[in-house]
Length: 142
Image (cartoon, rainbow, N blue to C red; front, side, top):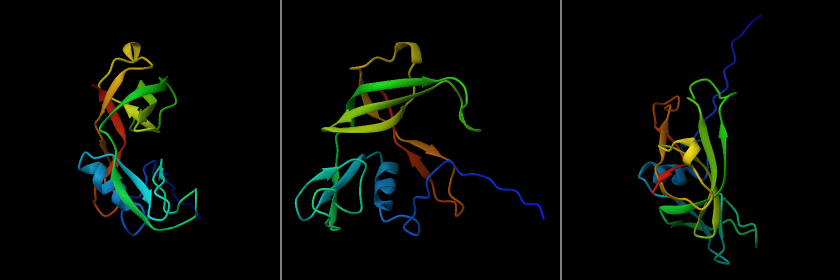
C-alpha cells in the first residue's frame, strides 16, 4: 500500500484545534495579544493556556503594542519550505517586555538592523482545510 503524506507547516488555528484560537482571531484583526493570568496577573509570551508562574488555567487576553524593536535576526536564503519565497528575515522583536519570534517583511535583508523599529503586519498564509484564514506573526519596518 502506498500513500501520500503532506506536512502542513502552518498551525491549525480554530477552536477545534487550540485553546488559544483567540490569539489567531485577533492577529487576523491586526492585533498582537497575549494571555494574562487571572490568578497572579503574569503575562507570558507565547500565549499560554496555563500560567507558568502559578499554574492557574484562568486567563484573559491583553493587547500588546503594535510596534517593537528588533532584538536579533537572521536571514534565510536557502532551505525554505515549498511556498516560501526567499530570502526570509526571521527576527526576535521586543514588544512590551516580551520577545516575539516573527517574520520581517517588506525590508531589504541587507538593511535590517538590531535596534530597528518595526510595526505589526500579520501575514495571511494558506487557509485551513475548512477554508478559514490562517495568520503568522510578522512585522514590517516602522
